[in-house]
Length: 285
Image 1 (cartoon, rainbow, N blue to C red):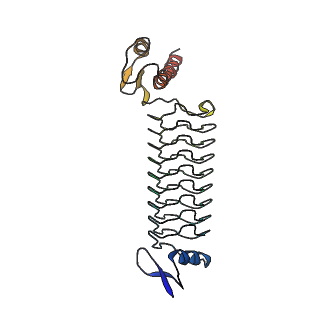
Image 2 (image 1 turned 180 degrees about the horizontal axis):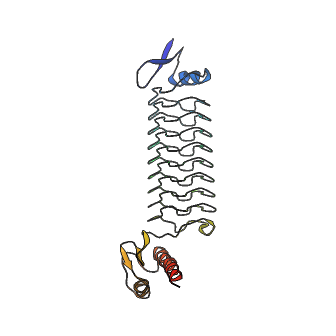
Image 3 (image 1 turned 30 degrees about the horizontal axis):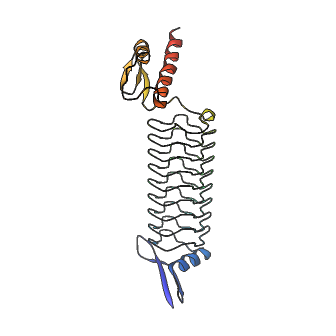
């Protein structure tokens, strides 16, 4: 007989024991879930849970760093505050799972099903979410800096206030996604579908929207690669602050600063200026 003990990650006390011939940690965890055992704060670091059926498991606060959860069934699992750094979750079924505040830094979630999952406040810094299904997922305030979301399905996802700085969203489906107040500085949205996406208040400085699909059907703020505002009757774009007359002279000249003329970035800068010009002119009329 082989005896497997699952211990508390903080105290080292045994929280579940499983005995069987040729028993494995996977057998122990699956059996514990079937018995509705309390696996909160369990030490499962590096565990081989490939393909395990962990449906509705309570793994709150567990240490699953570097565990192998490829193809695992985690439907409806409670993973609040769980440490999943570097965990392999490729192809895992996490539909409806609760990952509120979970640490998923550098986790591999390629092709995972996270439809309707609760990822509020989760740390997904540098995570691999290529081709993942995040439709309807709640990513409110999540940290997705430098995350790889190429080809991900984010239809109807809540990304309000999410940090997507430097994220790779090429080819992602953002149909109807809520990106209000999201930080998308330096994000790559080439080929992303923005139909019905709400980007009011989003920070799009240095973001690449050239080649994004259906921009005309998105709710977009006035944006360009530089910060812009009105300061005392002058219009500031980037580090340049000018009057309307001075901006008109610049745009009618061949002068160039950092952005080359006849580019998408330059057209956006000019569009921002024209919007502010119209606003100030109307106020003075």
